[in-house]
Image (cartoon, rainbow, N blue to C red; front, side, top):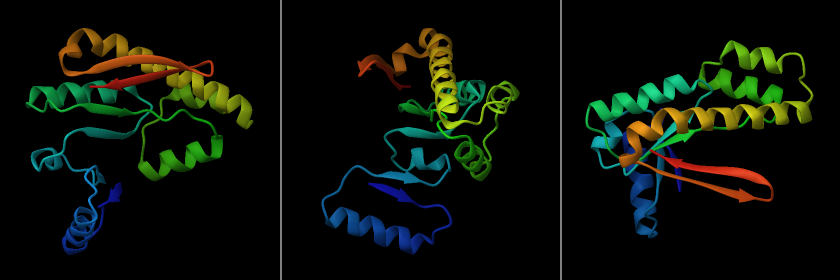
Length: 157
């Protein structure tokens, strides 16, 4: 279950959690954005979407340095629509690298944007795998599968 907790009063969150528990649900993705959720019993961290792998790599390193050892799932969302990409990254205040904007700005056609987005997402995965695998292999799981001709990276750090 996906539970958004941002800007919600604690009593409403408590009520939602009690209802969830009484219905037998156990796996909850609670979105709030505050690191103390790990101390409160979170089993894993799912990051907000990002397009700057250096920020993700620093985040993982910072977590490990302070003793957070639970899996960290990178929020990689391939770009498939130019206007949607700008809207979502604006809403989330996501840093966008200049080379991504430079690649997208001249095309804007959704099929070309989708192709560019697949390439960008693949490059992000490669960078994460290259930079983190040697340092954090003991913390994570890495697998790659091929589904209908598409490479799917399953990476949990």
